[in-house]
Length: 497
Image 1 (tube, rainbow, N blue to C red):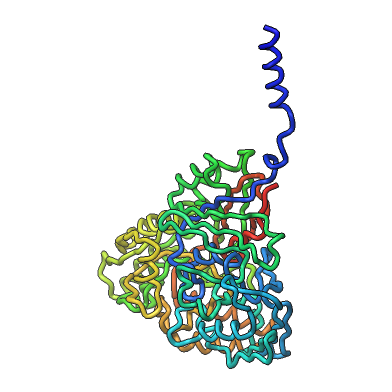
Image 2 (image 1 turned 45 degrees about the vertical axis):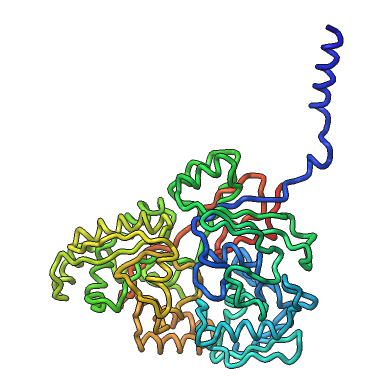
């Protein structure tokens, strides 16, 4: 009996004793959830924000880095200066940087990347920006001088977006599936439809500062499945989780919950190429039929601020244009009659997978039905939406669609002739040229106000709301951003407490 008790006591002592150092070491891997799977891994040739969520600052790097507060700081460029007219920027590059394939990063790689973005065959989402570069000069291996055709005070910010990722010339063509960058992570594996794994690059210039050796990104579009993955510890973090499941985590001590602001614009996009949507009265009728507040409450559980134009509160020159096209179903009916539209008017409503679009689409369809517009809902996968609805020079096969444009400073998109909306208004294009030719902030702010009023008056889209993005993370995981100046997940800053 004594021997048995001694064995039990010894075993208990072992359990109570401090664990070996190895067992006590902090976790160095993380599993993150994402709503959408990227269509590829080259952020310079496609518009999907999901590409940036995986690759930006992780696989690829840019000259500048956009921080959580929206400021910019050096990344591949150590410093930069601007001419007084804000047309010429000189970037001094970081020395000793290499790409994952061993090739040296230098000014030639920057010039190649930017000229590739501007090429006639380019599908870069910010192609118009790079085509506005009058010249990209490389006086030496560590210096790049960019001359823009107009004043661009936001250039350092714009070059920190995923579309400005610096690629290695010899590997650029295969970056969609075999990405090569200068960032702290490399692609480990991509299980299509399921997950992507990133592995820490041992030869990164500051590898010791990177705490996570492995990041697994799981694609989970269903809101209930997103919540279940967090509750079962299958996922450690879910940035921009579906709003309908967010509330259950607020009082759960196992999680940290964050609600971040954004510069995103959620809209009902209207295809001006289709009749009768080319008639401004019909577009105004669509806007008058939509109750923004009811939609925000029903589609995103109140996580949004109403907007009336393609611009968000907090941005330079913002003006409230929600009163230009207020909710007024009776006015909507009158406008349709004035336009000679016989009701019921049938329109397609193509909805991509995000919950705000699918939930919002049901609400929009119900509201439009009350004024005689039958919105025939078609749920499409993300790749279909990009190719059928959004793609430049694509079929633009839609009447209406719902999407959130997450990039700031993207009024220029409205001026692009092959943009999916098909607006093409020379008066707006001239106004935008005036905006970018005005370097002083006060003058630019006034013109930006004029642009917002024009877009609202022309009912270019049904502008719905500026979203807030909720995030849920394991309480021991740190470094995850609350604010969302753009869609990104900077894994170099994540670590376990």
